[in-house]
Image: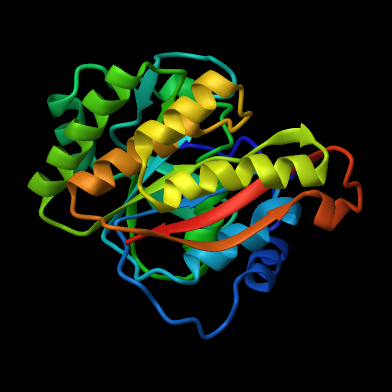
Amino acid sequence: MIRYPAVAGTFYPAEASHLQKAITSLIPPQTEKEVVRGVMVPHAGIVYSGAVAGAVYARIAFPHTFLLLGPNHYGLGSTAALVRSGTWETPLGEVEIDTELAEAILKACPLIQEDASAHREEHSLEVQLPFLQSFQQPFQMVPIIFQPLSWAECTTIARALAQAIQERGSTVVIVASTDMTHYEPHAVAAQRDQEAIDRILALDASGLYRLAAETGLSMCGYVPATIMLLACRQLGATRGQLVRYMTSGEVSGDYNRVVGYAGVLIL
């Protein structure tokens, strides 16, 4: 089964040569590579958030598989929806799903269900693929998107992901796809986002979850980020590192109503 792109031509260029040129311009050259357990990256149109995503991906040593976790913006399909097999297509080619890891996750966690329909229109994971493809290194991926979950559900899923990764026996990087504060003035967004970033850098998953769930922080992927932090800690991560933070105002010039973007390494 091939999953065709849903947002080519809107979130990123649909023409392969234009896309490659755009992505290349967003990736810093000659950066030192880090072995990471996870990363947090944004998922807006690449003209707005691509500089943050590019800075993160330029810093990491490529694994065998990227486990992509994102929010389900449209509420379609299962609460926690995974695609088990097949390929995802972008203008830069096809990416194969790591079926062995996907099946291990499904076996380890009944809360996660196989549901390709939930992914059909979703952009939060699709926009990561052109960045990964642009490095021209072999990799596979497993995509999972989440609707809002309880703290107990997050912890259960994180334990299952860590277990499946350990059993897989090959290198896996967990990618949490999220934008930060939505549609606040730049100064307000930056202050609110710093509170979340502080918790992420401390690997304080419960603090991040409470901040988003209880204070109304409009961080659309706080559930994927929470799960990523929990799973990475179980896999031995000890610290986070902020790569870059910016808001859409720095691109559009409109600082009155911005979206925040943060890129983080989990080591």
